[in-house]
Structures are given as structure tokens and as C-alpha cells.
Length: 128
Image 1 (cartoon, rainbow, N blue to C red):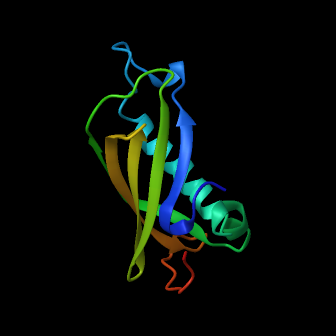
Image 2 (image 1 turned 135 degrees about the horizontal axis):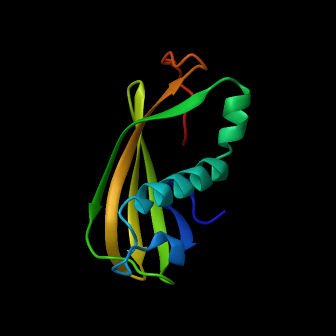
């Protein structure tokens, strides 16, 4: 997988369908990019979503934030860095989106582990 858990990076290429009438990536797609990068990160550290769900553990998003710095356009090759931080029962993934060396967006998603009935699980399970 690309990078290490402390310096994980995931590459994507902007598809035409992700752009709006102005020819730039629609703001809602950044959350999708974050999810794709987070999923790849989790697989790289041996904690893929499908295995956790099989164990009855859900990773629920309780908050998301994006700061848009510069627009991305169709065909741009983007690289998303992912960093993980535990905050008690909650945990957060931080993201930085780059086009080459230029940072074009940043943000985070905050999560909790729950069971299938959406009861919060207090577990030490996590990521490196």
C-alpha cells in the first residue's frame, strides 16, 4: 500500500462526473475522496471495513469538515494524506489534499465505533 500509517498517501484522478458546471470538483466530492483515502488507510494497517463489520463493529461518522483552498479540475491527479488520532471514545482522521506540491484542501472526519444497534463501543481497538 502507498505510504506508512504515519505518512499514508492515497492517489486519485478526478473524473469528469465529479465536476460541476464551472468545471471544478463539486465540493461534496471531497468527503467521498476522504472516505476513499480512509478506507485505503484502514486496509493498509490491517483493519478493513468489511472485516470489522463482520465482527459487528461499525465505524460511524459523527462530524466532517472541509476547508477548500484551491479548486481541483477534471483530470487532476490528487494525493490525499491521512493521519489518525484517538480522542477518548472518539477518533479523528485528518486529510490533506495535494495537487503536486500544492495543498488544495484539508479537513477531518470524526468517528465512533458502534455495534449494529448503534450503541457506542468503548474499545481499545484502533489504528497504529
